[in-house]
Image 1 (cartoon, one colour):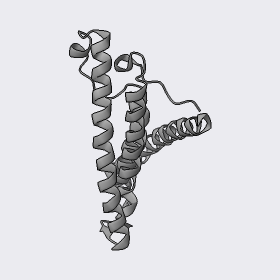
Image 2 (cartoon, rainbow, N blue to C red):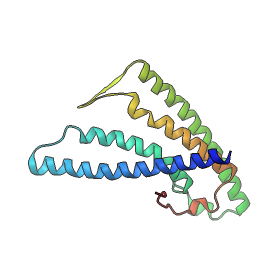
Image 3 (cartoon, rainbow, N blue to C red):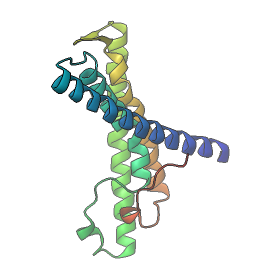
Length: 170
């Protein structure tokens, strides 16, 4: 079981790292697009669509790592006034609720992705992309968020609402 947990931890860190790389690459190609369009009147046909798809993938694949680091929004003003035992119960309740919501969302979006694949639906912008490809990130990311919320409910990290966000190890 320890190996499985370690493998899962490495997966979450790798997805966060890949998301960071993808966002960095997106900054480069969006800058290129702006320069090409404004200075040379030669816009690309791929930068906007690729940015849209990259945003979906990076958002959902990095979300479990952000949750682990305590980087999601919390209302510290309220939480900090609570007694530690009450704070713990609230964290367990909110993490459990988050797990249920993410599990339902993962299930429903997975069903949609399967339908997109089976029906061979295509997104027709400047590129023609099978619709399941950009949407596949949603059930994957929310399934991983479900696992992360369950872990948080079972063993909430110490001071999770105040945990600093650190870069994933390389």
